[in-house]
Image 1 (spheres, rainbow, N blue to C red):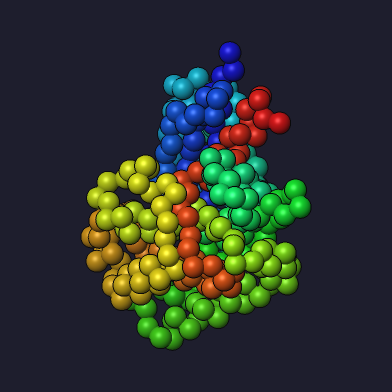
Image 2 (image 1 turned 180 degrees about the horizontal axis):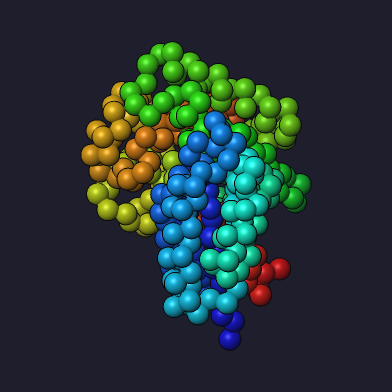
Length: 310
């Protein structure tokens, strides 16, 4: 009988784990805010404090994997490690802690795994084209299956990066909002030039949003005071709702945001920047609705690890 597999996502803002059985059913899902990317923009390196936070969580995950009987796994690092001079050192330390391989994904690989994971349980809906939007801490990926292959593009904007460079963590004024829009708009110009097919999918496009910004938005929109996957997964979110929550949260300090039902601790200072990214992408793609997905890059990586993957 095939043993469980584990996938770990070391993102810019959070470190997450999934353990799945041979049939792909999730046995465990864990998330911890570790802010691995903290200060990378300014210093070019992962700080010792950020490394320590993340490696402590990886130690915890190793214990969970051992108890679940995992013998095969992969740790995937993304934007923060791609951008850091000491990224290779982090990967070496992560391998030693976890007992399985740790690699850094290219932006294109990140987009592909995210697409495969987010669409793993998505219905066909009359064959309409599907694109995914993965807003991370340091980067944002857009991907779609076009002519039988996944086409993806990774932009160097994410909720942590936009917060640190343009928006700041507190209440948003007009000047900061303009800086954030300009930063995101420039990244989208590059994406449209680099992957024009993604921006020509037409008005029937179904956009699926994943990762922390969208998941937290879905919880806020539902008014949840505790996480309920059945409510958040595949929740429909309008562009008007994205703008409303962006502006509402943007008018508050992080402490006030944290008091709202559905806010995930550790996201209160960066979620507004993430929502600026979400709204800008929806505007550029010409879509008025976003479907939240709790299946994401972890599901895509875990599927590739299973012996039954074809």
